[in-house]
Image 1 (cartoon, rainbow, N blue to C red):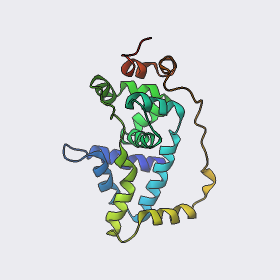
Image 2 (image 1 turned 30 degrees about the vertical axis):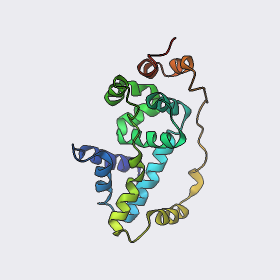
Image 3 (image 1 turned 60 degrees about the vertical axis):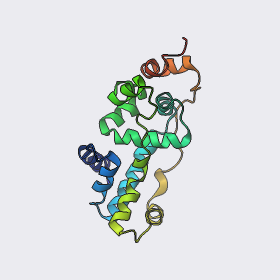
Length: 190
């Protein structure tokens, strides 16, 4: 599955969201129309896109938005970036501070809500769809391990996370992420 096919699935799920149908459920429904093999291919691309934003600057944005951000929470934040769709994902990958323009981030800052963008269930959509397609007869993680072992792993490895910096230093956060800091650090002295 190439990147365009991956984002087509994400956008189809986004367009199917409704008041009683959250994105993660729409994504499982969309993936459940695929073959087992295509679900595994989706997961491969998901991991690639998810890993591409495993960077300190993106983590700092998550830290501001979430009022802190553990390793596990950062996984959920990156899944949430994917759930925002290709446009917002790419904007954030290019400039994490651009999230200060996203309506959900603005609303969350105004409401002192630290949940914006974090979306744990998106991490498990392929597993849910695989279970539905197989009737629960095959374990997704066993199938994933077999699939991953059959792939050329040369592209895998540790990515450069960029420059590490102190997330608890308000002045540093204002310098690196000025728009997000203006939304989330407004109660701290300059």
